[in-house]
Length: 477
Ligand SMILES: Nc1ncnc2c1ncn2[C@@H]1O[C@H](COP(=O)(O)OP(=O)(O)O)[C@@H](O)[C@H]1O
Ligand SMILES: [Mg+2]
Image 1 (cartoon, rainbow, N blue to C red):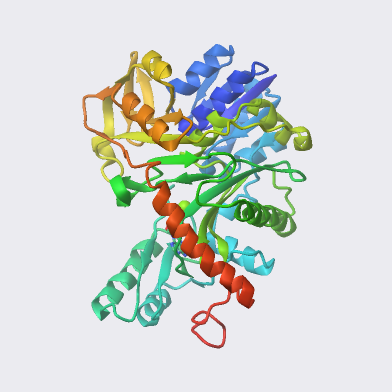
Image 2: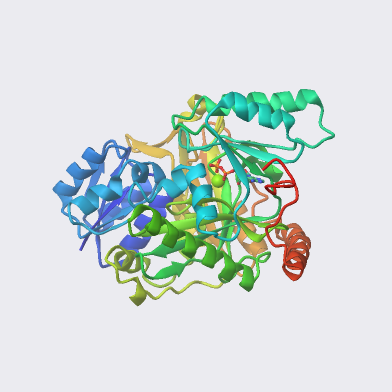
């Protein structure tokens, strides 16, 4: 059977790896550049590699007609927004990936919040949407509580947002600075609604990815990603500098009940999307969650796909045939899927060239080499991200170049493996990576315990999700 995979990063490398590993499929890929990790799996299965504009629905259709795949798999969000999954379905080919309409759950944060309130889905935050930047700025200056300011839709790939503590003790000056950032964010948004301001919450974050064919729902093990560029969570936000998953299906700081409640939220959301758009949701729908005092499991945003670098932590832990599971999801037979997972935890460490994420030009065109056989001996897997083959050399394209993954009995053990494997990567530029990933488990367990105590108390008092500041009568909402 032929599979056509769309996308070019480390997440797609992990998918390519599991599709090839299945032994049932010939892998064809369509990327915007030649990713050496995807290419290896395409070659292994005697498939073919296509390079072009994956954001163009017409080009996706052209590749579909050349390959005639049995099913498709779409990795990143931008092709989904632009109708890549619709391109497959219009040609009568099953695909893992929601329609452009259904992927609005990720594209528009305002649409997402409206949907959650309309369908009374738990874990929803209060928010205000603004078409007019001046009104949003005025609100920010006048409001006394803590808020998160976000663009109403995904802009330029990565979200831009400010999470501001506009507490009463903050100076007028700081409030004005926050209201100025409304302007900066809003200018990037093409949608009529420009800005969404949410109540700010706090707690450990985690992601639940759920695969669905529209009828059956298959939840994957939880993962947590690390957004900030530098050690200990400082520096600018990135696409993710690493992630952790396991042991088992939860994380040490999320309990079984919270996992189930989160699954319920994601499932209800997929069902609400169908009611709202008429489109059956087929593909991954992922809740990026925070465990909060307000609600327990709380939605920060949804992905309409697997997260990256979360995928690289989860996919290598799957011991059953994940390629087949993808096929079953595409073809509406997900109820037959058998998911088996290595119980041991995994850690992903992303490696990026100096310059990422703020100065991509500096991060481009650098050479990277790595000793893959030795890494394998130590027990690490390497997925390739923003790196391309030129004349037999691995050259960076400006973003996270590699994701190293290690599975071990303990997080400490996985960190040790990653330290050894990181030393097997060399470059003619300085490499940026975080060695703290997987080493903050205890702190997060403590933080979660405090949050858990509070939200369980709210349940007892019957005030889960209720807020004084943001109530229609008591506050500004
Ligand atoms: N309402 C909120 N309260 C507290 N923190 C938030 C809130 N919304 C977002 N954040 C923080 O900002 C990060 C990015 O926000 P998110 O909505 O995921 O946007 P994007 O990933 O598109 O940039 C989240 O991972 C979370 O840490
Ligand atoms: Mg996010």
